[in-house]
Length: 276
Image 1 (cartoon, rainbow, N blue to C red):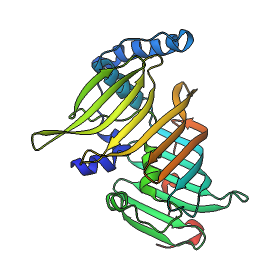
Image 2: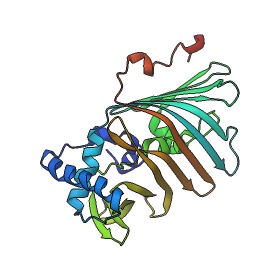
Image 3: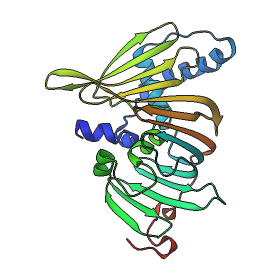
Image 4: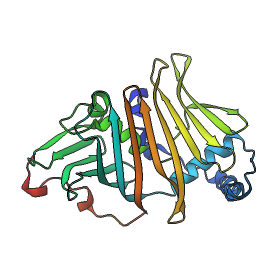
């Protein structure tokens, strides 16, 4: 996978995840300290190896997701749809569906399906279906729709447990409040900063992720909050994303972890009799 493909498709990166079996015991030990830290506010110490194993373990917990979300978009220039409710369906490693509903009587607005490297998008007002390559869509952000899906996929893909490719270089900084994991991509014999991940030292939850482009400029900042246990898995119910000229706030209203999914859950063609 090229550096660019990894960067824009990191929400699909579970396909590349390696199971570190030897790290499960250490990761569960850190998870135990999460509960203890939430009660007394005690800061816990951990090595970078333990933190990376913990993030891997959290990825392993999730195979499928069904969720209801509320999304607010504040951008310059303004997008046509600034707030809407939606349904998100996800299946590891590559399948994602987003359906948007308008504020009046929950009227369907759009339907978006990404499977592998392909996508389909349907505007439900006229039923027309657009199809294409997901890499190109996320690179350009262009599509006839109420929002830029490149931005929305950034937020939906960041479920509070950023994926770190084992082939990348990592470094750890400890502050009084946070662990900061630096993820570095080696390119032409030189290191380029890919992202910074901020992990709370009390509850060991990811609180912030800074994403950088190839030139080293900070492209987006993702923030996570309102962590709750759901189906035995602790997930953030609030995610926000900010970059120049854009802020997206996403709140999960309901999450079902690892539900049984059917092929129809990702079937877009034929909705309302539409044709591509």
